[in-house]
Every structure is written in structure tokens, then in C-alpha cells.
Length: 309
Ligand code: NAD
Ligand code: LMR
Image (cartoon, rainbow, N blue to C red):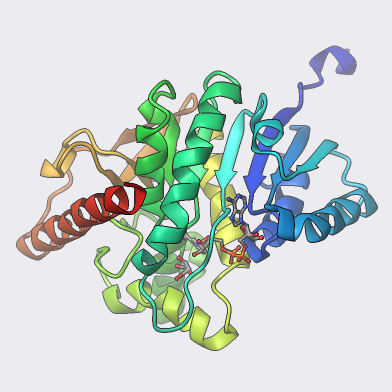
């Protein structure tokens, strides 16, 4: 019967849920954009005490929107309550950069958050919880989370470079005047930063975050939220045949990228697991860029540890 077929709700944590990405993201999750139109969800929303009232306002709006898939909302400033039994964790909490800053300039404020929330996730999340770090510097925050949550399988910890990937698709579509749905298989290598590489339109994509900040006086939010949904959806439900996407994942040394960094690779996903696409040709320019972004991530890792000590 349809009752027997009904899926159990999936618990999805969004940290920083009272912020601007959170505000765009939680209704997408509640509408099934992230996990599919037949997957009930329970939202866990975490923010810090100064944002508690705003967080409660978001909860009120979620109730008011009467989302059929939304089976419950936990809105809290308690990190243990927020992390308990979650199946998916989207880590947005932290501080965004302002005009004129690089993403690593928010390092000292943000890595400490990822060190402390790593333990809460490790202890209280559901087994096999999948983690997506969005807050900047995203790769390095994800690496710190991984290192301070050693019992979470490293395959389960990722960072968002899908926004850069989608930006590259958008640029190709605009410049060739073709629908974006006809463009596929761009690649973002390495860091979510201005050393990242993809095949073409490098500068525009690298500087797009800064251009949005300049235009909106706030960093990207709807595109970040939408890309976070794309990232989790493809990870959980699989990438379409013949298509790869970019995900920041723990490097195993593929493409001679140093192991032990969270680095963006082209991946395909099946049965809830990502696999790095192997054997793509890397020309000399690309090789230089792949190495440069790896060097930057190694420096960020050292800087992160110096902020934590
Ligand atoms: P925002 O300031 O609007 O919201 C961030 C929220 O996090 C705030 O409500 C804040 O109170 C909360 N917060 C702070 N410390 C916290 C903690 N310890 N625990 C839980 N919540 C905490 O910022 P935003 O525009 O939503 O951006 C959030 C982060 O995402 C920033 O670091 C931004 O740079 C980053 N970002 C990343 C990408 C990407 O592609 N990887 C894209 C856009 C933005
Ligand atoms: C983005 O790429 O839009 C985000 O990382 C925000 C930023 O600081 O650029």
C-alpha cells in the first residue's frame, strides 16, 4: 500500500540557518529540491544566540508555508540538539567576506567553528551522515572538520565548489547563447578561491563571488543555496549518465594532487558515493593551475592550524 511505501523522513541540518544563504536554502530543502519530491524531511536549524530570534522567525515562516514534505523543524542554538541524528549536514554557519577581502581572510573567525562543530557531529549525527561545508574558506573548513571528526568516514565530508561549476556552465551558456541545460562537464579543480581552474572563462568564474558582493553588497545566497541542493542531490541520488560534476573531496592523490587536502575534482556519483573521474588529459597550463591551487590549499591548512593553536 502507499502507506507501506512512504519514505522515512531524512533529517537535514543547516547551520547558520538565520543567515542569508540559510533563508534561501531551507525552503528549497522543504520543497524537495535537495532530496527529491517524494522524500519527507525534518529540518534542523542551528544558529548562535544573537540570531536566535531571527532563527525563530524563519521557523515561523516554514510553518506558514505549509510544505507537505516538511515533517518537523528543530530550531536551536544548542549544537548537540542540532546535530543529533542528522543524516545530512549542510554547514553554512560562519562569517562571509566583505568587498576587498579574499575568502581566506575569514579563516581565523571560521575555522574555530568547524573544529568545535566537528566533535558534535562525530558524537551525535546519524551513522553515515553526509557533510557539505559551504562556509568559507570552504575547502579548509571541511579539512578541519574532517581532522577533528576522525570517526566520520572521509568520503562523507565534502565542500561546495558546485557554485563555481554552475557559474562556469552559466558563462558558457551566456557566451554561446545556448540553453544552460545543453552545457555539461566543466571542471572546477582545487580550491573555492581565485586560484581555481576550469577550462575557459577562468577570470570571470574566479572573480564571480567578488562581483556579486560588489553588486549586492552581500555575498551570493540564492545561487549558493541552489548549488548546495545540486551537490547533495547528485551525491545522494546519483549524477546523470555521461555527466560529471565538481565536488570538493578528500584527495587520494589522483591527478598527482597531494593526498590529504580537500580539493575539487570532477566526480560521478552512484549509490550515495562519489568517484573521481580518472584519466582526463591535463595540459601544461592546467597542470600549473592544479599545482598552484594545491599549494594554496597547503598554505591555508597551515594557516588554519596556526589560527587554532
Ligand atoms: P550570513 O552572515 O548571512 O549568515 C551566516 C550565519 O551563520 C549567521 O546567521 C550567523 O549568526 C551564523 N553563525 C555564525 N557563527 C555560527 C556558529 N558558530 N554556529 C552556527 N551559526 C553560526 O552569511 P551567508 O551569506 O549566509 O554566508 C555564510 C557562509 O557561506 C560565509 O562563510 C560565506 O562566505 C559562505 N559562502 C560560500 C559559498 C561557496 O560557494 N562555498 C557561497 C556563498 C557563501
Ligand atoms: C561566492 O563564491 O559567492 C562565495 O564564496 C562568497 C564569496 O565570498 O565570494
